[in-house]
Image (cartoon, rainbow over all chains, first blue to last red):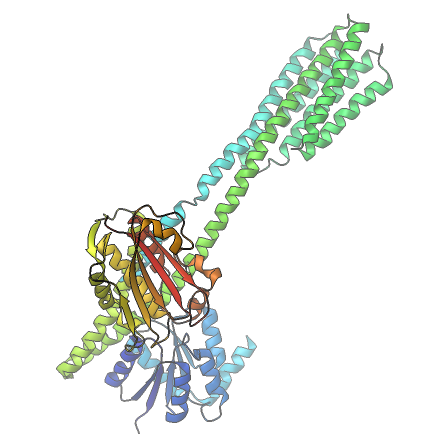
Length: 138
Length: 473
């Protein structure tokens, strides 16, 4: 069965480029959303196998989106990758603490993006529990 | 990556240019001169006096007095040398304490000399007169430590007067007493010198305070500019990352798939690649535009040109990304015959900026109006509330009115500053670099015009940008 990926970014150059990239370079089925709220609707409706989400967006930001996803039992196990221009350690920390599996800083090379999406889909629930435990120890 | 590096280099150059006028180095130099005046000058005066005291006392006959005055003047000179040395070594701002030390050193000498000389010549001296002289000088010491006060000057004056009284009294009774005469005369000279020094210090301290307050202002401005720069950097940083990543994606696709791709698909990808590239190039151009505006070396070519074609042309130049909705109604109320005297390229730059702002900061579907009206010299003062001066020549008033968010009154003054963006825009995803209106203002002023924004600040009521430009006479 073809895996589906949801891309959420408000940038009108970047979003189409990522959609084309994933369509051309992988076997995934790709959906795109322009903002967090629309992304949330599509996530619930399509149940993608992985979501790549930006942070600074209108309506609902990336952190809120990730927390909303993890807070809902039906979407809690979907692999999440944050892709943001916010490059500081604290942004990364907040992103991972919110429940994202990976935090990528723009610009990311296309190969790294594809690889990260692949790796995110390998993350298991045990991995997440272990990561959260490490966070709480820090 | 090279584009980012170049853009960063350019930005750095722009920022360095604007920071230059607030150079901290100039301020340090000025402070050093003032410190020279307040510390070194009094110190040199004191050393001269000490040497004078040393010679005067050395020539006197009393062995005890001789030894004391030599000792004391050596101490004073050593102290002063130490202060100067300390100043040169540390270069710190010790102005606050050093005048006090100097005064204390001088007055200490004075007290010793006075008490000793009085003690050796009992004739007309009472314990009271010795105590009174000593008390005056102690007050000077205390005042000197506090430094920089009018009391110090008054006290020195009173002490000098009292010494004059003492010397005339002594001369009247024992005019033959040479040692005593020399000692008190020296004392008077020292006190006059201290008095002059106090006045000098007061003057330079006041100047120092003025310098400090203006320096504080400069540092506040620098800090504000710094904050604006940081915001600018953050926003440019964010703006650059997206189109560059998009370009990387398209290049990767073309690189690996160009053989098994339909010509249409390839054309579409190339098209999008170009659009992302243009965006990066526009970002760099906007930074460079400010640089050239600042450099003021751009030639102005003032010509009489019709306004309407320029406005229509600008509408085509505006980035389609800024049109949130193509169904927006745009009312253009400009007569075909309206002309203006300006540089066409500059006017285009201003209009493109203002119109695209109006579109960017108003909701999709809301109308936009662009109108031109000529202002006759006599009419101008009546029609414009905030008019700075009565117009001497006919001007063209171009107004661009939108029904968007508007600008709160408190933030209107920020708009035309370099790198400034409104707090709400920084929090939103609306792109911008905070340079547009600054550029507009500079260009309008260089063509002999002006640009102002009026807005009630109520969202939905929008704002009106008024551009005044000279009309052909």
